[in-house]
Length: 352
Ligand code: NAD
Image 1 (cartoon, rainbow, N blue to C red):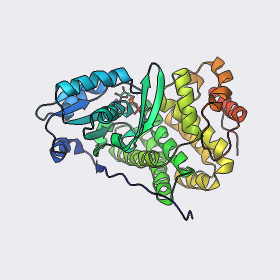
Image 2: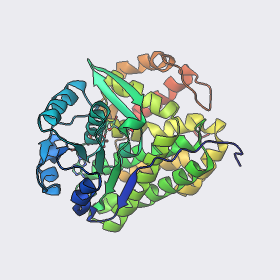
Image 3: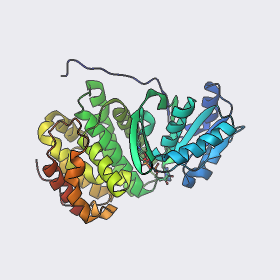
Image 4: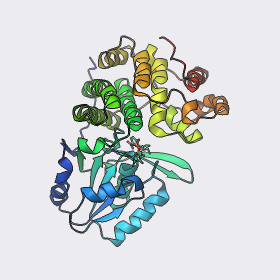
């Protein structure tokens, strides 16, 4: 067992359970706030209005993927005009990203009500886009005071996004299993989070209205998000960041397609993580197991299917070589380019 480690616990309050969105008003009171700004994407604007029906709300339904700074500036102007004294974000990583960006600039308390499995609500990480360039910062100032996980709000998450968002969550936990700054407590959460998602997502794919399976998936997503917030990520997340930025690929789907391949590359250097992944997924070879899970969930089968241009393959080695980072196995840019080419075509990851 690892004999020396740091474990930092965030002080956030988590409410979990069906129908708990009804407690939003009480949670706002608890923060001593009276005039919330409620943020969401345009698609979830009317849902957000139904969730908060207390006094003096102001709504901003303009959140977008990758937190564009110009959107944050517009929301900040509305926040100041309304003299809002807390921020409520309702939705997936896009809405929660906007809530975090506003908290960073205003120092106001935040309540997050997540409706996907992305896990941003559990992390001190904020990615923002300005002039087409995405930068990422880590600050405790973006951590929410309260997170309300209400499984009923995930019932409307389309099957396609449920599968890819769930694999996005599994990716956080999988990389936490071999993180340089991981620890035994995070490994417990990671294994349990992956187990819960691997067990529940196929049921959700068959019956998106299954409340028990949705509950287990959301519980897994919470644990996996906690892993992302606590442990540093490696090849898989950095590669998704580089390819997503270079070719404008959908966030969750990109994570889903690439995950088995990046784990396969790291497998020879991460036997303990592979053993835990094997237990969590019920596969002796969890790399092939996750590849098959993608198929069972009906997730996109290849990078080509999610819009990566074939000419982009020639740029992968160069993209991988920029900004070196820690990885359990030294990065061989050519070997990475080779597995990305397999992922482009949807061929199974090579056996390890
Ligand atoms: P998203 O928030 O962009 O949501 C995708 C779409 O699904 C949106 O139209 C949204 O309104 C809709 N949607 C969300 N929940 C729904 C529901 N329950 N029912 C119906 N529709 C629903 O997608 P995402 O994958 O959750 O978030 C991706 C973003 O989050 C990216 O910008 C990514 O970088 C960021 N992210 C950040 C962190 C972090 O720690 N900072 C972690 C994970 C993801």
